Length: 213
Ligand code: 5GP
Image (cartoon, rainbow, N blue to C red; front, side, top):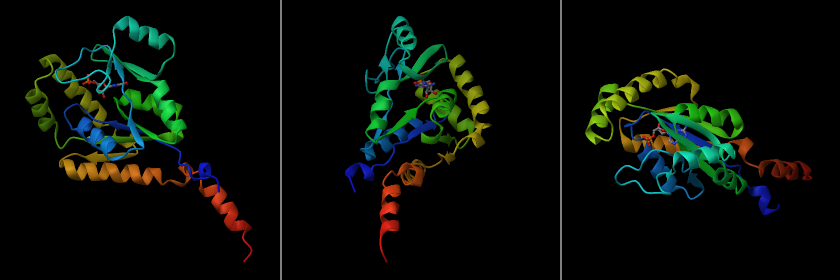
């Protein structure tokens, strides 16, 4: 059997959660623990927050640059969120899939749905549920990154999103980081093992059926 026949098709793992629920920490740990999984670094017109780095957290671009990228169809999806534009650059995603690797997305609900529409069989959508909206509100105020208006908008958006839980493939409750992380890693491992993603199975079965017994 050629080495190509052993290949696994990568998947697009969309991890969605309201802000302040630990989504970024869960996603970053999953990436750090899996060399075959890459984070899609979005382009955004939002200015960097303290501690954020170009190319690690986002590609920080001006509005004209973002518009030019959009016109050149360089995004797999893009959206306007809280007055800023965000987009998932297409090329690195396609490169990873072509290598048989997977891509994780730290994006909002509408972006995840748009990616699923374009790549239904490669997509896996996971929702991270906060233990309570009160706790989420407390975390948003504690990190003091947003204005009162944005915090209120994030809370009302969270309520709308939580109600859509049954449009996701998996829902994880993040009331304990280590348990939530273990569940996310199990989902990733199981999804990698799906028969439809494992290109080695078909030739292997053909060889088995050719065996004289
Ligand atoms: P923040 O400004 O807090 O980093 O992100 C605001 C929201 O935009 C978050 O829900 C985040 O997941 C989402 N987001 C980040 N990148 C993208 C992207 O490329 N596309 C979409 N649709 N949403 C994104």
